[in-house]
Length: 63
View 1: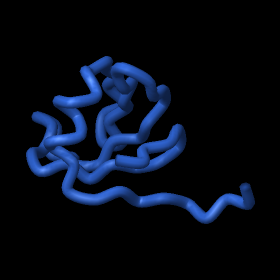
View 2: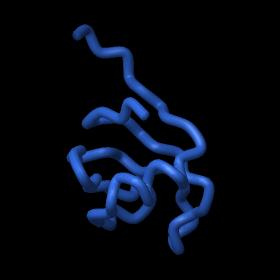
View 3: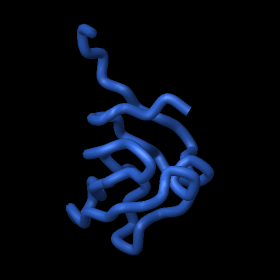
View 4: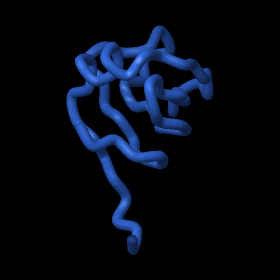
């Protein structure tokens, strides 16, 4: 799965604050994600995050 820094991930389950959208701050063997509802940050293994992704919202940046 092609997940990049700056992408917004829409997850299958909501965070306790009610938000399902997370911003990707770091990628690699694990992801650092920031909740777009409450601002909580966490590190999670890549395989756990990838199985919970519903969709990826990517801003159109010139590469």
